[in-house]
Length: 501
Ligand SMILES: [Fe+2]
Ligand SMILES: [Fe+2]
Image (cartoon, rainbow, N blue to C red; front, side, top):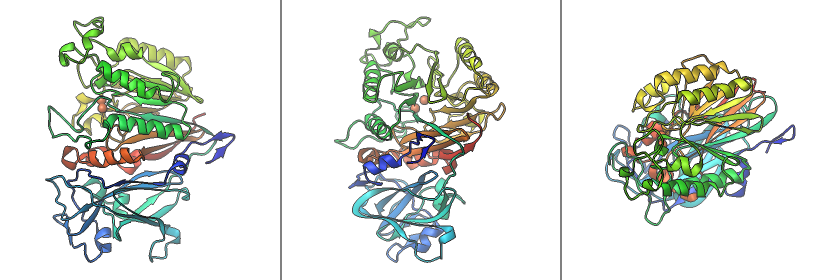
């Protein structure tokens, strides 16, 4: 751990020291419909028993694929990959993972003499999903790496990891350089926990066929949220911010269960905070007559909507909250709409936000709202602009945030993906959609704030049951989920240098 001016920097190494630096899923009956890549790096390194069929993605023997460079911090890197029995067709029947060993080799390129890479991690345990963090790396340094199982180099999976210049394709990554100045605090963001959901990856109706938890495994939203809280608690995080879609359909039992799990971390609005997502919106009782919505009063201004989320969590619709995390002001907005997945901000909430910002416009501030705000977010998502905050409110909100010089970061959930987008108004605010907790990419995002800037890192959950679910959930949407949700390395891990305080 770093210690800067008496502030103990929170990072993941403390958690890794508590357990193993490598996570893995033994046996791992995770669902698999994979494409083997045409990665030249991997083909060049393939052992003789792995005959490549580069245009069909089929290989015989063990297939070592789905390589992801998930996290790169200033001092660490986290890899994941999976092993399957080949031939392994691109789509079709689900196949189980195949057990194999786990090995990582890497070297700084300035010390690379072109020979065998030094092995920095080796585990003979036979597992199907491989997850390794290597720490004690040098900041701002480019490393060459190979991830291997049974001597075969892990290849990237489908399309996006195979694009030129992705670290999975080049076999190189560069560690970040933390911002200068005093370390101030770390803000921990979870989003899209979807407590109560049973069936992952449905886009509409019952299509595509969802992925379910393995028989005997706990409900996946609870597995993931519990794992996240344990990990954050283990690294000394003081407050957790859940950025919407806390529940599946805001059924009373789901809201209660969400609160029950969160309360294991601490008290609401002291140790944990939640914004409302579209899934947490008021429902009519006929949405699910057995859910008990009708035990709640009719929401004022509606004919028959009931609001268990608002009542049970004491968070009426379209009301913001404000708290402090160290010297940072954190504002949570309710961007949900009554009956739709898209978002809005009421005039009253805009007024409240303006009053709060104008109270101290230069105070370093993070704003959280479930819905993305930028037009780039809308146009780059398959569901289009109607899925995000409506354009008039989005423009007004961006203007308000940009006019307050202390606002430096606006976080969103909802899309379940990691995606950094450009604002439409000014350049004062960093807009980031963070990856979902409840399933692939399966983790949380940390904002390490310094007086001279901030560092963003997405971390996949490392507990065995969380990794098993993430490996399985990856095959939702016929295996295209990583293409839509993982984002670029720079959407998950980056540094912004600017004066914060
Ligand atoms: Fe969601
Ligand atoms: Fe959502």
